[in-house]
Length: 358
Ligand code: DAH
Image (cartoon, rainbow, N blue to C red; front, top):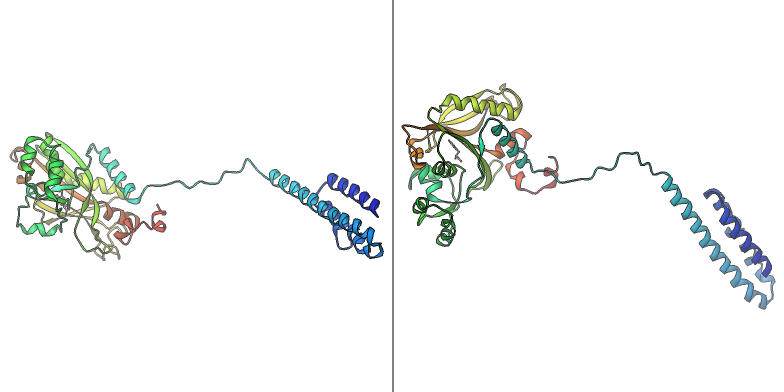
């Protein structure tokens, strides 16, 4: 019996080693380790042996069983890994790796800027988000106690003096005298940059200024406490409303990639005269009337006008010599129209289901 086990061991090891595929490995397993396999037959016949023999043969047969089990398992893994290596097709296109992408507002801002740059406007970096009462209101022809201040619900800052001493270090002497003792606020629009730019540049020029602005308001589907504007200002000796209308018509046509009519309606903003509300033909229905334009065929898109003489004066220009136009465009409003976004709060929600669509 002892010899028989040795013989089985040699034979089985050889067969496993030389075995060619998974199927014959399975046969070998059945032949030696199966219920009716050779080793089980030996173990089953232990009862016929003497006690002495049992003590030797039993453990020996059992340990051979374990050994063959391991050998078969290893051989099997060898076959499997070879198989997966053979099935690797290096000519197949690779898996697409997910990389980051721009936020919809950044995409829109870049597009707007690109269009204006192609029309020879200079792109001016935003200016301070913490602004003085002077630049945000007074210099823009919105004096204290003027009812127009109510159009801008304002975040006022408390610790004024400390921030002012920090801020004034970068200012020229004449600017410093204007902001001395000023109350500070989070700018409610990008229009203060009109003054800051005029103070330090000579006309003629045409600029656009993207920037973040803040309003102390209740939020809803079309109001946020912080949003983004693009301010535009063009000043020269004979800049007029015809120039303005041509430029914005061209701009909106390029932005929405279809010919869009523009409509100018009289409106009021203290820093322009005349003040205008600008409508574009509905980007969805093209003017026929739909749910987006509330059946009117037109969409209100931005405020604009000819720069008020008082504003030119505050910028250091003679209003009898220079004139210009200005407008303020809301980036969120444009993005909502272009991408059909129903709620302004989605931009800052951090909701990946929303963000990943861009
Ligand atoms: N600053 C205005 C606002 O935020 C928008 C605006 C209106 C800007 C008319 C302009 C303008 O430059 O001419 O409500």
